[in-house]
Amino acid sequence: MVSTYNYSQRQSIANSKYIAPLLFICSLLLWGAGALFDIGTALFELPQPAGAWLAKWEILLRPVALAIYGAAAFLMSSYLILERRVTWQPFIMLLFTGACFNIQPDAVSAFTMLAFIVIIGLLFRCDEASDARRQLFTLFVGATALAILFPQFTVILLPLLIYPAMSGKLGGRSFMAALLGVVTPVWLLGGFAFLFPGMMTLFDGYKEYITGELQISKVEVTLPMLATLAAELVITVPAIAHFMLTTSIGRVRLRRRMLFCVILDILLWGAGWWCPGLFKLFLIWRMPLLSLLAAYIFPVLPQKTSNIYMSAALLMWLAVAIIGLWIG
Image (tube, rainbow, N blue to C red; front, side, top):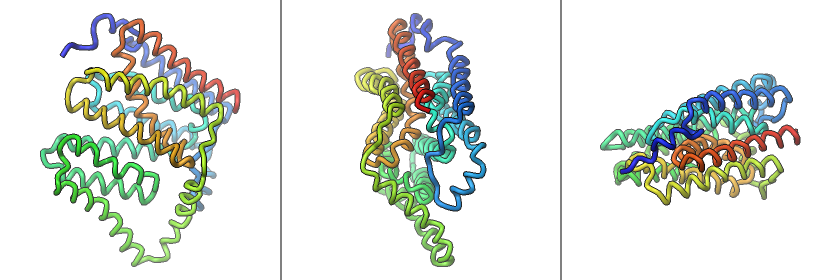
């Protein structure tokens, strides 16, 4: 396999040693601007009493969300997917989240995104075992437990079977192990409800919340949201097209992981339009995948093309931030 990282590409912006600190500084400036002008609110409205408790600590939501986004960014970049380590991948994700002022203080959605990235990491552990039954059982126990607390995770339960099927690890026994992983938290919840029926009233607020979100008929596309979607597509569409049409990322396991991340990105995109009330949440979940696609596409292009493309993409995200400041 001919390496796609030749000498001329080492001179591109994407391969510069200064791009990581520059992106980090820009992301901090964007997060600072959001805090200074107090733009954005917590999008994930929790039922009482959780919502009231968070309202008392609203001033801490933005720094907590930044810390969670940072942890998720570095965790996503630690997964072996690309054929070389891209040091600026975590910082470009912080820049993406910083440019979207309306999601900056949303610490709860940031936490769900971190849990989403952890699930992806647990799924990739299936590659390390010849028999993935134990890994799949653990994975689906955790994913189902999260789905009980945050029903939005039900969207990814079935797609989690795609990756072991792609790698040939999804046989009859491993499928039953995954199914047992789904059933186990449900059994435990049923036993808890039987022993303490009064405690189940705590879930009434979550039921009302999900019912209300599912009743929203369409996505309200505002100017900042439209700019964010355009800036996202400028990266995702060329990255996915390049990956599908070329042999860059030539190792079978890495290519399989990248393909699964592409499938997840497309799935979350479609799910956002199908469930308009969860559109912004799934946008947040796509941020780590977007950083992966950016870290993939920018370095593999020829030097001049990469420089122009990366500069144009970053300028579009800067325009997203400017529009956010203008609209407020």
